[in-house]
Image (tube, rainbow, N blue to C red; front, top):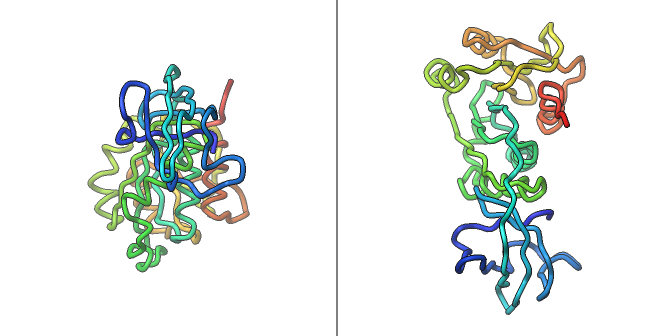
Length: 238
């Protein structure tokens, strides 16, 4: 944990907060904290700063903090992601939050198992917790939005034109003829399930102004492909 992400409900006054010790699992030397311990803290959707634990009791810790820094700039990438397997979803959303992606749509697709949509991992609280873990790793406070779309065709035809307006539009597709290369920002990126989007789905996206690109002959898992795509299409600069 590189950052303690404070929630507005945990604030107890100007520069004071109280957090439950059950929020994180015990970790030797790290959690629960001891009085006097200094922490890097940030307020959800707010600024970053430093805090000091002032007291610890049986179930909570209190700290004083000062927020003086702005969070890092977001990655200029909107992500359209075919719903991954539930066990992979947590890792993918955490990775997306670490990268600085702030707008995510989880989509249905032909190769997405129907049972995935019944998973309790899709509850708003769970989705937020996965993103929060990524923010704490990356020292960021701006919570991504994650929206669910159960019907692919209506989403592409009715919503996607306004979502992708003014952006470069790319769909990652293993069979594409063009290799992924740095693209102009902002970027709207569609990433399919592990088996890829079907040809029909790719055609629909291309009709909406998307161009297909590939990372090469290897078919990568989504959790691997996403950071590779982000680094390839929008390489970080000093």
